[in-house]
Length: 180
Image (cartoon, rainbow, N blue to C red; front, top):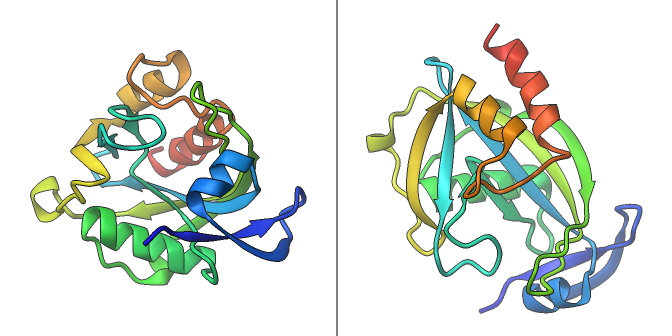
């Protein structure tokens, strides 16, 4: 069954309308998503490679965990669900550190429109890769990368790394403080 999303207005207010995920991205409706950056005590950032079957950015390296809010969800509920579904990580809500909310409206080459309000979170973990399991429909690979390498990827770009130019400076500022 296809996910259903609450539709927001351009200011991020819930309109009371609910639509199928495919129609939201076709029509360019505003909706909510979560982006979670996972770091460990080795000054590493968890990245995932998106499945080749994804409708946006297939086979690309991406942030640790991300997903949409389904109809009726709040941001924390969605973040906890995505962490469990994608990485089999069960965390307490107070472990998620809220960073900010971004308004983004990228249009992909294939006409896929992703008008989102994205809540950014940070999560510290002591888990190793072998203690996580990835949702194969969503992810084809997991890796921790050294923070210095992650900074270069964000600042200089990399052909197979999802480009989030308005998001990366924010997360780098946060991680510079975390890893200082």
